[in-house]
Length: 103
Image 1: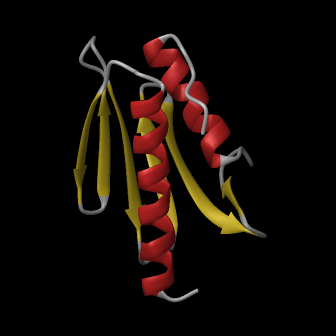
Image 2: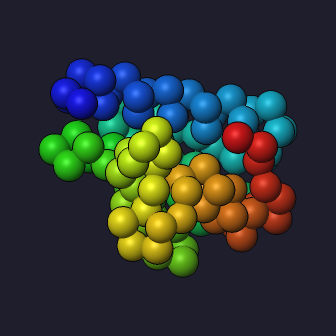
C-alpha cells in the first residue's frame, strides 16, 4: 500500500470512530487535527489515536498503555498483543467512559 492509500484508510478509521461516538451519544470531546484524533473524557483523561504514515500504522495511547496497529489481511492488528483495533479501542473507551461504542 502506498502512502496515499494508507492516509485514505486512516481517514476512514477516524471518521468511523467519530461517527460511533457521536451516534452513541458519548459525553466526550473530539479534536481531530490532521494525523491525530483526541478523545477527551469528562474526568480529563484522553485516548489519542494517531497515524504513523512512515510505518503505515495506527497508534493508540490510553491510560493503560500504547498500542500500534498494522493492516494484516484486511484487519488492523496490534503488533504487541494481536488484538483487533476496534475491539481494543472499544475496551479502552469503556474503561474510561463506562460504556462501549459500537464500531
